[in-house]
Image 1 (cartoon, helix red, strand yellow):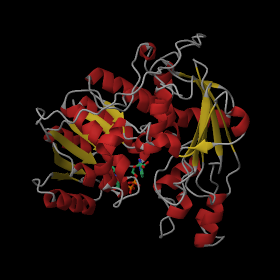
Image 2 (cartoon, rainbow, N blue to C red; image 1 turned 90 degrees about the horizontal axis):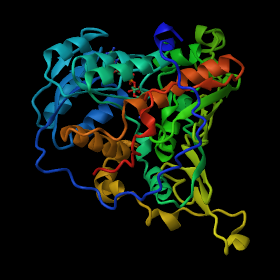
Image 3 (cartoon, rainbow, N blue to C red; image 1 turned 60 degrees about the horizontal axis):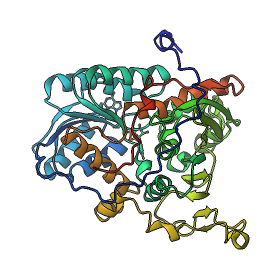
Image 4 (cartoon, rainbow, N blue to C red; image 1 turned 120 degrees about the vertical axis):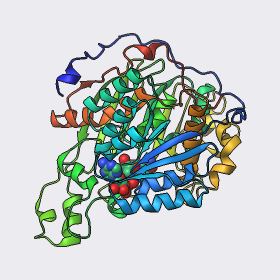
Length: 460
Ligand SMILES: NC(=O)c1ccc[n+]([C@@H]2O[C@H](COP(=O)([O-])OP(=O)(O)OC[C@H]3O[C@@H](n4cnc5c(N)ncnc54)[C@H](O)[C@@H]3O)[C@@H](O)[C@H]2O)c1
């Protein structure tokens, strides 16, 4: 941790196991976008690779969006994305591809409301901070930041500019995650005690920026080679943070983390390039399984799993445990595991004898507690599923972001969420490096968590 970070003292434990969770139900309806808001949102997009391309294509289908400028270090990607924008009947956006900091020239030259970025992790903060300093809102792919110092940079830049900085955490929009949110808000599980989350990415199977065919390392492998902790925490943690009102009546207090040995990447390199190749000879710090435990000041505990190098199916499994009931299962809404793989157990005095030890079906609750956002926009969202597995979630997320900013409102997830969820990365790395030492969370809200209203991901 450097000087900039140690400037700020972490809040000491408040000791107050306080406030309890908000159990009020969600709004029954989603107000359609205010038709009087016809001001369009002028967007500049930085990083139009795999993920950026998908997000851009959804943005082009949303009402009230103008893609004004595109930036990528690869000219061919800028040109390809410019073509998509023109094909969507918008005027050709300006292109910026003169090197790694050309986004700054874009900010100087373009009249933009929002800068959105889907660059590799290490560029999220430079791109967003420069955007905020130039007076634009910023939205970044996950994780928002790599280090604690970067988390603070985002918070300070957003506060100073008086602009929004949000993280594009699409897992919060899984339909099951939102059914569970609704059940929690309506008190079905009682008071929340514990959550578990994981996003076991299958990065080897996807070869997600691990090893390039020319025998060099991709940008994800560069992180895995040097670091060891939970490097990708927000998919697993985001839904849980919304459920548990983190930064909104509660805040994260401390964390411990532990990693297994890391063997899978070396094995993958051996299989891909042979035992004598430099990629097979070098060391990779990242453990193949990382487990992180977090406790909030109100006494809610969280378990978070990370690790996608060794063979296992991608499975965003989560658990909620409350005083009146629990649910467990995979949050993903589509695919072969869809049926029966999420289960609910509620404590019911009379039936308890008969159902003791058995899970009930999630589908008994799914309709009753379906989230208002999905009820209103689910059909439109589902159309995007055919193009990309996460298309439906991305659609809902971008819809909310675009319409909140068009109306001059705060998006549902703010810079404090981006900083807090991303901070798990460096904190877990430091804990792992110190034999699972207990580390305090910074309070990025500087006390504002006490009075902040819960976010229900509803448009109001
Ligand atoms: N939310 C999700 O479900 C999800 C899924 C995949 C990826 N992601 C996130 O999206 C981001 C991008 O991942 P990806 O798989 O698309 O990576 P990618 O490498 O395919 O795309 C990144 C793009 O950024 C460009 N780039 C790199 N440095 C740049 C710079 N300084 N300025 C401008 N452009 C630059 C690259 O040329 C490339 O086109 C990552 O943060 C990743 O974690 C999120």
